Length: 430
Ligand code: 4AD
Ligand code: MG
Image 1 (tube, rainbow, N blue to C red):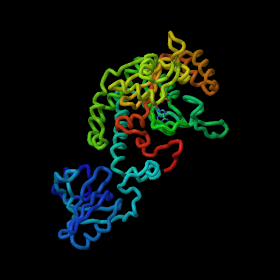
Image 2: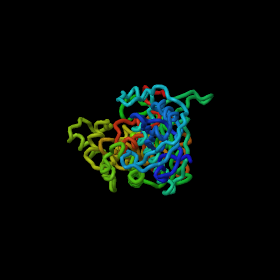
Image 3: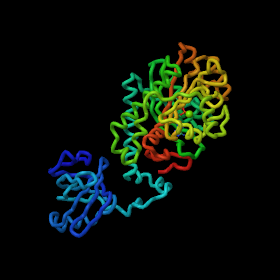
Image 4: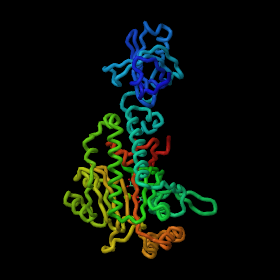
């Protein structure tokens, strides 16, 4: 009977069949140890010549790393085996003998690994990361479902610039002029929240970021939420609830994966309510005290975020930034015209911004002014401005970068390993 390796514990002393690939092989005389992986786990399959016979034992001899095979055998419990079980081979069939595998055990450089991303995905180090990514996505969708949000799929090809004109991917679009790859689904979510109250979208977003940093991709996945009748404080509370939910789910479901990544679990266990909330002004004061030369009015660089988040044992909100460093749609601060009602959420341990959020400008004239001040074309925002004409209400929302969140939870240095096929300024293949 065909089984998956993850279930092998259910079949002790039984005959099973496994389909997979050879991770490694070692032999000593009459015995060969073949580490088989099947995408759900790994198990050591043991070929013992006196039991298997000359002919089949010779087949095992031909196997090399990443050869594909079908193997039959009896499951044995074995405390010494790294996976706790062993398969005593009774029969074997080779599907293909692999050519010399480029990713052998020795250390490879990052560029080489990225050139071979289609193979790198198979390696033991990548396995836990992408499984955790999968669980994070599922946790996010559950969170929104349980909190009565409606999923709204927003378009990838857009006519209105969602964030800023500086990082656009554009393409010709028939007689309509330029189409832009979505930098965000937010503007469409704002329309949808006036119909469904609480909505979210979850999809790829695109930014022609010139920055080569450990935090930037040109294509990344963002989950965005938008809520009618939410102000900035309610918005922050929801973000906090979501992050705590995600981290708890990962702690519950991904202990083996976190262990393989050597993740310091206690750091994740610290992610509890309440997250500290500091104003942009306070953040500047803290940074200057810690030796940064940042001045009021400037955006935080990656280094500033690293220094700042190291002061806290859990994620920290920074709210009410200067309007000049933020997007056009943010709501003007009621008492300080230089600022907008917004927040970022900075992940702990130096990871920095994982969420960008704000209350939205709900006043028609103020929004129109902001669009013009940012040199955006008001014509392509007619539909968006309509939302401020027909029953405008206070509303807020946020966007969480999936790859940065995966990087933080897994404790990785760079976002490039958090997505199956990363797109960066100098990387379009594979
Ligand atoms: O702060 P950002 O630009 O906010 C927005 O796009 C809003 N429209 C969201 C909203 O309110 N609906 O981006 C949100 C998050 C960032 O905090 C970061 O985690 C991630 O998206 N992000 C990136 N991740 C990887 N590579 C990039 N180039 C990223 N740019 C933003
Ligand atoms: Mg941001």
